[in-house]
Length: 382
Ligand SMILES: [Zn+2]
Ligand SMILES: [Zn+2]
View (cartoon, rainbow, N blue to C red):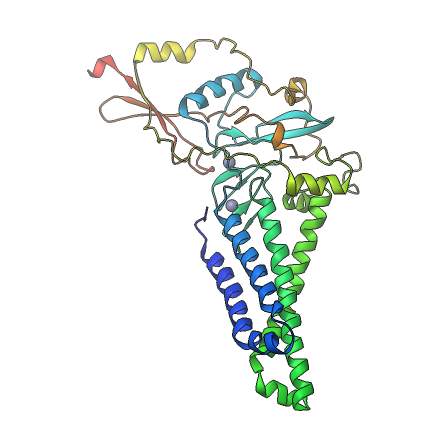
């Protein structure tokens, strides 16, 4: 699922293919005869694993959270009003948030005004993809996709196999140069005979530090059950927040690794064959509109709750946020837990018809797919 800025992905692919091609052309013929024919076979297998994991990372839905339909948004907004009776202006820029309890740890759910939903724990909105992503790790331009719940293991497999392939090709080119030096007598003569091998060695030598470092960093994250996003923010940093514990860690690094790499894969929440519905238009007369606008709001039914995620409402209305913890376990979350919509903007057309458009605040990115219009028909003008 390539994003808009996908040119770097093609550069990544080009560099990998170029390095492997140079190795096959300039190193393989010599090494296959002088050392072992198994060397190019191993390199080819590694190359196939790298390309397949790269494509899998790029083309897999990272865990995009679908936006609520207009009907859902209206209903959830009504429910949100009962949960936040003190917030008179729903379109205020003040952050909306809820607190849930996950394995004994209070976790905040922040409201995304672009997607019109409360982000599940560990989720974040990617400005490049313009979507909220489950278990958001980071947006990787090298693979042209977000790294999230559904493609993280492929990403990890990709960077790990790239590191192994990098080391393998580097060692082979060094071996080629070393054997030629023995044959020719001097290193300069060997270099004159196969300068490309030296170039391959330098490419792999300088790239291995970043690739291997990235692989090691993500191994640490998996072992401690963190995302890059959480690590950068220091969400579970024991020095910054000594009283905060990671509710997603099993406490055993082997179990964490097993769960991250070998656990069941969550199905995509996207309906790729779904039909985009047109905007909803509701027409009411001016008298009804004014009556509805001044009518006190009746309590709405309770929002559906996931049995594994309890909502602490007292904390929502009374407790000030003492921790900037945006952590959670997407396994225990319902789809779009409590989404809501912003305050509608009202206006009057030249023909006297009041338009009532639900749109995002100017400071917030507009939602392109969901616009609800309500027309108020003024009987004086008809
Ligand atoms: Zn969002
Ligand atoms: Zn992204």
